Image (tube, rainbow, N blue to C red; front, top):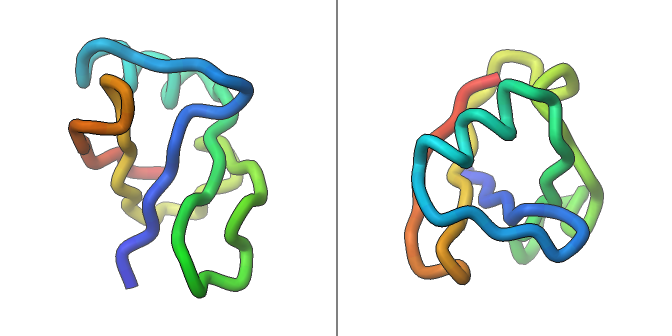
Length: 68
């Protein structure tokens, strides 16, 4: 199952570089995946346990992949 994340607390990013920098810095993202048991919960890189996630950015119109 592909899990999609969105920036938490109203944040948004304009580029993949910004998304990856925030992910590497341990910023929180919110799980936004209908039907996922943890939909709506927050996650950051230290909690990712080596998995890959799709992250929506640029007003949720673009997607990049980050790895935990």
